[in-house]
Length: 107
Length: 118
Image 1 (tube, one colour):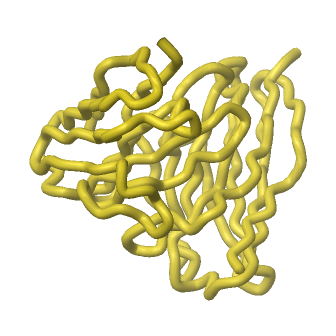
Image 2: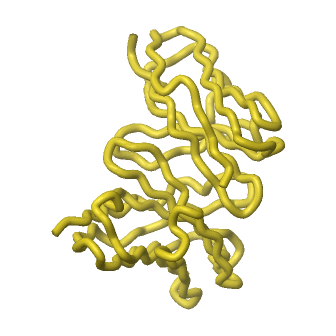
């Protein structure tokens, strides 16, 4: 199965900061990558699909880039509602995998 | 409006099996894969596998091969996930989710807590 490695595991930031999370795939997944946000006790919510496409209703401060094996999720100006855990997820082929997650907490 | 309603919490003994259901509403059940994702306490998301409701074809993560079975009943638009030979590290919240072809339907199922304890 394809392995997804996120960095950092934890990111401490302040409201208004620009933050970037990296996700690396163990093999080429083209642009078959999604980013999800999860808050404690809740199911995940999709932010971005196909590496760079914002899902409906997702604020424009979120953006995704990359292809092949290296991808990033950026938040241009962190808002209070954005403190959460973020996961990348590859969907290249029949077997999918998630990254281990990046927790964005208050600095 | 899409709704995924899962069965209630389960407590099971090591070595036993558990079967979780996911009743779906508000979309054409046969047309979209149902996926199962689990999350152990304080841990990340783990993709378990998926089922094509129309054909019944399945794909499973290697970690679960031989221990998981995903089935469906199209007459009641419900998907099932059965995990056998349970261990304590199978204690987790199990979610069902539906992929549209380019994104996840929102919301996912509410999650089912499975606790494995003697």
